[in-house]
Structures are given as C-alpha cells and as structure tokens.
Length: 157
Image: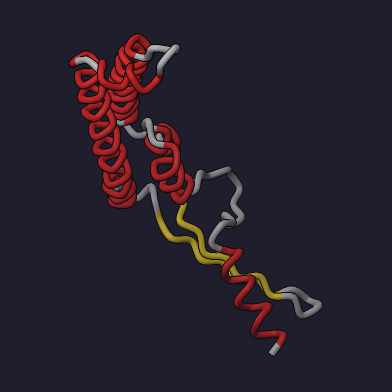
C-alpha cells in the first residue's frame, strides 16, 4: 500500500519536473501558468511567441483605462462628501462619478477579456511549436541499481 502511494506521489510530482537532457528546455506548463495567473503576455514571452507584445499592450492599456476610471470616480466622490455632514454629501454625487465608474467598468471588462484571450491563445502557440517539432512529450523511466525507480513525463519545447 505504501509503495502504491509513493508511486502516485511520484507521478504527481513528475508533472512539475522536466526530464533530464543535455540542454536546458523550458516547460510549456510554465507558459500556461504565467498566462493564466499573471497575464500581460508573460506566458508568450516565456515560450518565445511573437504574440507577447500584443498581449502586453492590450492588457496594460485596459488596466490603465481601469485605473483612470477609478481615479475619476474617487475624485468625484471625495469632492461630493461634506465632512461636516457625510450623509448630506451622498446626494451630491455627480455625473462625473458615473462617468468614472463607466470608464472603469469598460477597462475592467476589457482587461478580463484580453486576459482570457491571452490564456486561450497560449494553447494555440504551444500547438504551433509542437507542429514545428519543437514541442514534444518526453517520457523518462530510470531504474536504479538499488531498486529506485524514477518516472518522468514532461512537455517541453
């Protein structure tokens, strides 16, 4: 039972380990993780894709629009507050706050859309590298003299 548990643990750990080779190769999993978690074209930069700068500019620009909208909203709301009577200031919220909120919403939706596009596009880029023969599954099983077994499966380019 312990042996089976160790083998399962080994196979789970193997997914994050590259196979041994003479030259260092980047794992495609790193590109997936960077695109999914960080965005801004980092996964594309990691795998050397030509689309990296496009996603950096799109996501960076939409983040800037979001921040500008939030700043306009914050400015309008702080101007509307009457610090002597905070409840009276609530009725003074102007169209400027609505405009800022709308700009911020547009920037946020665009950022989300571009981030999803970035993540979906990384799969196509990996497939292109695979079709070019640059990306491949590399299984590796090593049996040691003292009974140790090493199993590895990596997706490298």
